[in-house]
Amino acid sequence: MVVKVLVVDDSGFFRRRVSEILSADSNIQVVGTATNGKEAIDQALALKPDVITMDYEMPMMDGITAVRHIMQRCPTPVLMFSSLTHEGARVTLDALDAGAVDFLPKNFEDISRNPEKVKQMLCEKVHSISRSNRSSFRAPVAPAPVAAPAPTSSSFGRPAPAPVARPAVAPARTAAPSPASPAPKRKAYKLVAIGTSTGGPVALQRVLTQLPANFPAPIVLIQHMPAAFTKAFAERLDKLCRISVKEAEDGDILRPGLALLAPGGKQMMVDGRGAVKILPGDERLNYKPCVDITFGSAAKSYGDKVLAVVLTGMGADGREGARLLKQGGSSIWAQDEASCVIYGMPMAIVKADLADAVYSLDDIGKHLVEACH
Image 1 (cartoon, rainbow, N blue to C red):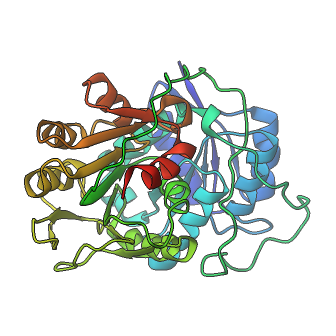
Image 2 (image 1 turned 180 degrees about the vertical axis):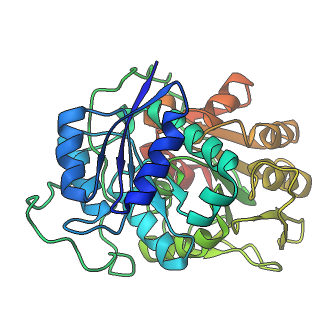
C-alpha cells in the first residue's frame, strides 16, 4: 500500500529535499506540501494524508500548535523534524505531548553528505508510523481558534500540566483487545526496569506520573533517544512526576523513588552493589541505549528480584534481555496492543512467551504500585 505524505516546512530547500527523498520510494507518494502550520491544517483536511512530516519553527503558526489542531480535527501520524540541541529536545517533547508520533533530527549537512543513510532513515520512519495504532490516540483539550497567534516559547519548564491526551480516531486496523491479566502479586523487587522506543516518551510520562514519591523500588528507564535529548527528557519527567528522575551518570546509586534514564548514545548497566555503569555506545549495536544490555545486566545482578516492563516501540529490543531475566525467575510485563502506538517490542515479548502479564498503558502505573512493597 502506498503511503501518502504531506511535507510541512517553511524552507523551500528542505521541502524539496524531503519530497525528493520520499518520492524515490515507490511505496511513498508526496501528495502535498505546506509552508506553515495553518497551511498544514488546511492541507491535512483536504488531502487526508497517511503521514505528515512537520517542522517546528515556521511563520504564522508553529508546528506544535499545528499538531494540536490536526489531532483535534483530522488525527494523522506526525513525524517531527527537530534540531539536536537541548532546546530542540524540549520543543520535540512538547510536540510528542501534542500528539506527534515520532521525530527525526533535522540536519542539513547530513542530507548533502550522506543522502543514502538519510533516505533510509526517513523512509523507514514514514513507513513505520503510517502503521501506528491510531486507537491509542486520545482526544486533547480543544485547541485555540486557528487564527490565534502561535506561542512564543515552549511550555517546557512551566508548572506541570496534566499530560496532554491524544485524539480519538477510528484505527486503520483495530487492535484486538488483550486478554485481561490478573492483578500482580506483591514482591520485594530490588529493581524495576522499563524499556521502550517509538511512543515511549508519552507512555513513560503516563506510567511514571502514577507513582508515589515513596515508591519502594529503584527504577531504570531505557528509551531509544539521541544523546542531545535524554537530559531534557529526564528534566521534564522530574518536573511532572512525584518520584525523582534524572539522566543516569556513571557511578549513580540506585535508590527507591528514583528513576535513572539511560543517556542517549551510550549503554547503561547495573551491578549487584546497586551502582550504575555508563559505557560508550558500541557501534555494532543498533540501539544506543539498548534495552537488552540493561535487562541483561539486571538479570546477572539481581536474579529473580527484577520487574521488567516493555512498552510501545518498533523492533524487538528487550526480548533477549527479558529472556535472561525470565530464566533467572524475574517478572516480565508487556504493554497491550490496543494501547501501543507501535506494537513491536511488546509483541516480541508476547510472541516469545516471556510475558507474565499484559496490561493496558493506563493500568501499568497502578499495577507497579500494587506489585512492589
